[in-house]
Image (cartoon, rainbow, N blue to C red; front, side, top):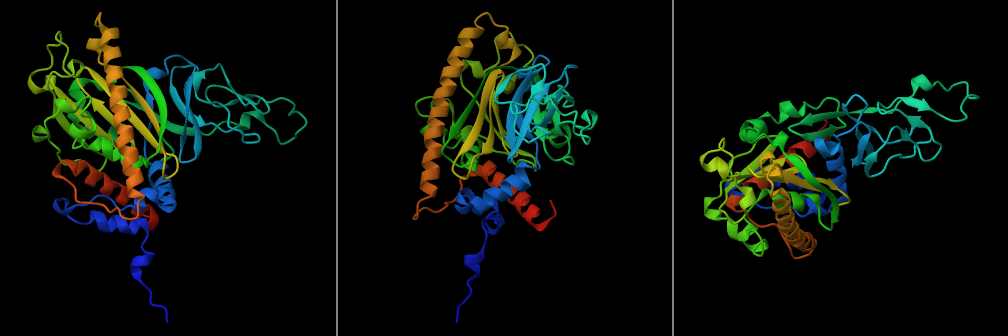
Amino acid sequence: MTVHDPALSRSPADELAENVAMPFEAARAMPKSVYTSPQFLAEELEHVFAKEWLCAGRADALKEPGDYLTMEIAGEPVIVLRDKDGRLRAMSNVCRHRMSTMLEGRGQVRAIVCPYHAWTYNLDGSLRGAPAMAANESFCKGDIALPQIRCEEWLGWIMVSLNPDAPSPAERLKDVEALVGYLDMGSYTETFREEHRWNTNWKVLAENFMESYHLPVCHAGTIGGSVDLMKMTCPEGTDAFNYHFILRNDAVPLALAHPSNTALVGDERRTTWLLSIYPALFVTLTPGYFWYLSLHPDGPDHVRILYGGGMSPDFVGDAEARRHFAAFKALLDDVNDEDRGCTEKVYKGLCGRLSEPGPLSHLERPNFEFAQYISRRVNAGRSGSA
């Protein structure tokens, strides 16, 4: 007779639900299966990435009509562009003829032309022309257009969602604006934007951003000395984001308010905010600069990363801005190299037979809240109540 062991039939989502049911004071890192399981990744794509707002970068990256970028959301090819009226739009990047993808990367176009049969679309997605279609009696140019996808600008960010029912970013993230609105994030200017691919699960990198517990060790060669763990605060987050903040010393001058800035006072002049906006936008915001990561899974073992950043108006307008930025960007690249080494080691380790999740520090509250968020979304989706 075969004895059924319920533990053997538990899914990764079940394991995660059990993991996050305990109080934070007894919390442990997420189960290994939620990082390595293709099944769990499929559930994340369906119940998280296809239903939430994702960041395509900064709105000032698309300044002129025809400026575009491309992205993929849960397997869906997407174009984001500035139309002829100056409006940000997102739409399907799949031709309505034989379903080829059309634009790649970033650039500027006057029209969207399919590289397969030259069907051509206006910047609003309407079909402009299709060669050699007059003999087909079912063809009507006016009936064909690229499906539109929700796209909104929020505090200077381009936010895109496949979900027609998702609350707007301004509504869902109003607490973010209440928290850091005094810095006027929408006025910061992006000065670089890059794309990378790392050999780790997307959540490993997300969690790495959320906690500064690792800074003194992982970043000993760069910014680790500017952080005092005993002065770090990790407040409770919300259903939409978590955060923590650091009071910086003068080791990274660009992280402090510009000397000419008289609007910021006290600790406002030296507070660095680390905002983890669910599911996949991670922003470091200081009085002088910002940088961000926008993540998307590429299999359980890889993550695609949109990496960008820039400076506040005070520093952009500084005559020494180029020198300030060059020093900042060189430092940030070194920090990211250190993070890559740490997060790829974590993924390699959690794939080991003898590894198991350990207890969390009080400085890892954001990680626990992130695990609760993932569990809520995935398990609600599986039950049909998302």
